[in-house]
Image 1 (cartoon, rainbow, N blue to C red):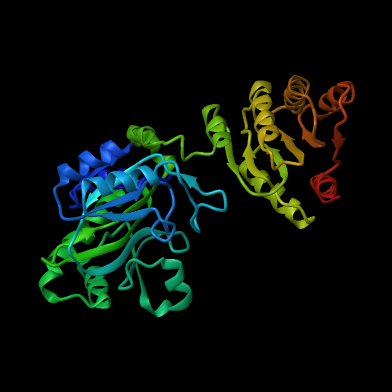
Image 2 (tube, rainbow, N blue to C red):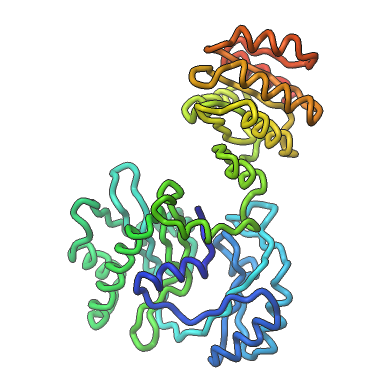
Length: 387
C-alpha cells in the first residue's frame, strides 16, 4: 500500500527520525496561513499524490511570501500531474504539503527495501541524490551501492561504515549518519514497510541529516498488526474498481490489457494471464475470486469486470474444488441478466459440479462461449479481442 509523503513523514517522526516542519493544506487560504505559521524565508509547496517525479511535472514549487504560496497552491490544486510513475492519465492533486525551506549543502539517495532473491533487507545508497534512481541505475550503475542485511542478525556497524565511505561523507557526521541509518532500519521493521525511499536525503549547512522527501510502501499483509493502515487509505488515489473489489474481499489488480479475467486461485490466475499473453492478447486485470466464493461474490466480480471500459471480452477460468462450478455459473448468469451481457464471455469450468454448471449455462438463454481447456479458452478470447 502506497502512502503520501506527509503520511510517510508522520511515520518517520513516530520512529524518532527528524524531519522539517510542514503543514498539510487543502486550499489557498490554508496555504497562506501555513506559510505565516512556519515563518521561514522560503517554503516549498509539494503536490501530494502517490507518484515520484513530481518536481519535473510542476508538482513542487518554492514560494517566498504567504501570497505567493496561496497563488501557487490554488494553481496546483485540481491540476492533473503526469509523471513517469502516474501513467498517461496522471493524478489529480487534491492537497499540498507546505514545508519550511532548508539550507542544503549536499543531496544523497538512501532507500530500504526487501531483496527477495536473497531474503535480506537491502539498503541502497547513492551520492546522486535528487535524481531518479532508475536513471542512475541505467546510466551510472557504479554510483549505486547495495548493502544486504540478514534480518536474523540485524544491522551492524560495518554495514553503516560501508555506506558512509561509499557516499564520501565527512568524518564529523559519522555518528549522526550511524544513528540515522539505524533509525530507518528500526522503522522499516516496526511498521512492516516493504519500501522506504528518501530522495533526497540532505545534509544541511549545520551538518544535520534530514529526509527532504520520503516515499513509503506498507505491506498490506501486515495490516492486522497495524490498524492505522486504514487511516492512510486515500480513495482519491485508489482505482475505484480496486476499492470496490477490496470492500468485498476480492483480490483484484487493474492492468492495461483488454481481456477481463475471473479466476479462482492466485496460481491459476497467473497461469491464465500468461496463457492469454501467449496467444497474443493482454489481461485487463488480475482477479482471484478466492477458494470460498459464493454466487453473490462472483456476481460482484463480474460487475467489476464489466465496469472496466478497456475490457473487450471476458475469460472466466474456474477449477472447481471448494468453489463449485455451478455456483460460479449461477453468479455469472445472474450478473449478466441484471446488467445486460454486452461483451463476449468465454467460460472454462472444470471440476466439482462442472456438469451442472454446463447445464445452467446452456439453459440460461445467454450466448456464452465455452472453452474446453485453459489453452482453448485463452485462444478463443484472444481471437475475439484481436479480431
